Length: 345
Image 1: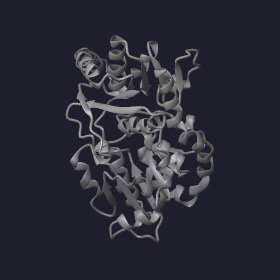
Image 2: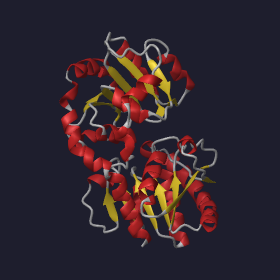
Image 3: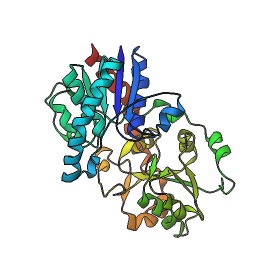
Image 4: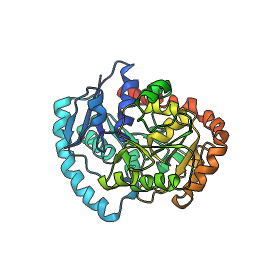
C-alpha cells in the first residue's frame, strides 16, 4: 500500500511535521509513504531525515488569515494545480492521498476525487474544512469542525499528531549545545512561534528582557524577515532553526508560544507550563484555552512581560492540567493513521 501526502507550506515544520508524524505511524501498518511539496520548498524537515519529495503546485490562500481576494486568486491557481497533481498521481500511483492542511488538503483531495483515488483531508482552517463534503476528514483543534457536533461517518476529530518521541529528550544534550552565555543556575524561558519566527514573538523577547527578569531567555525559529534578528542581539539566546527541540524541552522551565500549531501540542505532551502569546500570526486567535482548559494562560503582547514575571513565581499551576491531555495528544498520530489505513481498505 502506498500513501501520497500533499503538504502545504515550506516543508520545514508545522504542516510538514504533521504529515511526517502521521507517516511514521502509518509505516507501522506496512504502508509506504511519499510526499509532495510546492515547487521550490526548502523541505528542511524532510532533508533532515533523508527523505526526497515530489514537487507540484500547492497554492495557498492565507489559511486562517485568508481574504476574499486571496481566496479568489487561490481558486484560480488551484485549477491549474489540479491538472499538475493529476500527472503526479499517474506517476506515483498512490492507494490513498492525504491532503495536509490548507492548499495541500484542497488540491490533494479534490484531485483524488477526480482521479477516483481514496483520500483523507487533514484540516485546520475554515476553507480547507470544506473538503469534508466529499472525503474522509480529520479535523484538528484549529478547524471550526472540531467544536461542532459531527453526524458524518467520514468525519473525525483529533488533537495534532505529535511525534511520541518528543517526550524522550535529553537535558544534558541540550546543555552541551547551549552557547556560553547560557546560565544553568537561572530558570529558562523558551519563546517560539514554531519553525518560523514571527515579528510579535521576536519583539516579546526584548520586552521580557527589559522587565529585569532573572532568567535565560531563549528564542528559536527561522525568521520570517531577517530584520527580526536585530531584536535578539543583546541579552537573548537566539538559536535559530534547530533540530534538537525535544532536548530543549527538557531544559526549559516554561514556554511562551502561539495559541496554534504543533508546538502547543508538543508542550502539552511534555507537561510544560505554557503562556500563549495571542494574535502573533496575522492577528489570529484560536481560543486553544477552551480546548485545553486550565493547561495554559493567555497573554496579549502588551502584558507579556508582566505575565512572564508572574508566571515564573508559580510555574506549576498549569503543569498538572496539561498532564490530563498529554496521553491523548501522544496517541493522536496513531489514531489518525488508523483512520487513513481503514480508508485504504
